[in-house]
Image (cartoon, rainbow, N blue to C red; front, side, top):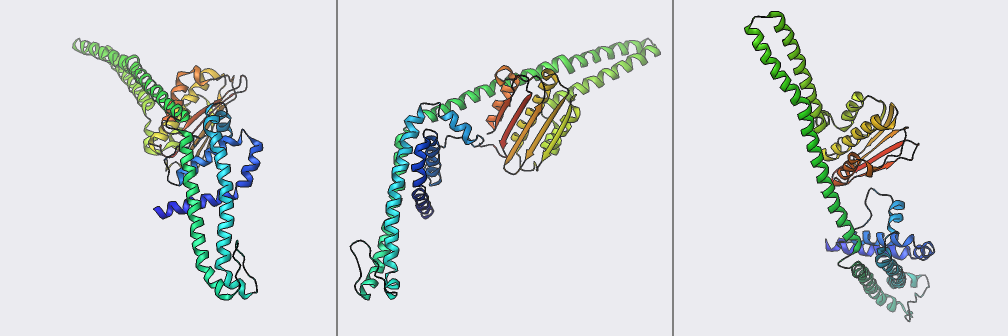
Length: 388
């Protein structure tokens, strides 16, 4: 394991040395290049086994993340020093690697070069005889090992400075922690609202139907005792209809809690069933397979589609919608589009707000693009497995 980490450190220093000209040019693109280089350095440190936390969410594009990052003060407190350090240490790695490894290679190959009549000069050393080139071979091996050690030390120095600039109270990490706390609180509220909705639906729907059914059965019993056959048949039919309505409402409520198609057939089949029940004309396009999607991910995406279709039917003023569902081994992305009035905002709808928190809780994200008069796009994406 230790050898792998050392190899990774040497590899990253070679890459940093090769990227030094790019880093110099990126100075001209500052401040955009500052958070990019700093984030890449955090990823480098994590790959080398250091406990660092890259700040860019995996589902967010670099352009959107950099734009948001530049609006924070910590980009100058944290990212700018990391950027400067990365540039200077890359120059050092380039110098050490070029002189050290090329010098070591020249010493190791000096007998071969001597055979071609070339005296390999490394610093003040220039062989004057064949035996001197043979002595230079172990010296080249030692120089190569020392160069590798120096580059590994440079990598460790990068990690030390990265931690020093990040500090124990990195504002970005604190902001991320606060966002997680707020998300957990919002998710708790959303779940509580969902439980209340289920209780209300059961009380106002199936429970009322069952109460009326019980009363009709009581009347049926009284009519039976009076041997009023016509009245008995009428009440029996009414009771049967009441029971069927109560059963249908119970099925709707249970489906809203967790549809059976989602557990039995998967996300794509459940969305197709949802489309079939929708009062809208929905054009569904699905690609890939949902076999690798975990249950929490599939449920979050399903209810996002369900809520989006409900909002279109209620508020968009159109009778059609389009759904693009893409599943893969790495995750899922769904887009629900309508050509309605637009102007939708997550902050104005508790349903969409709760769905966004639900998507975030499983490592996903929910976005709404809804210019006034330009229709609405609801875009949800998530990995195949939650991060927890």
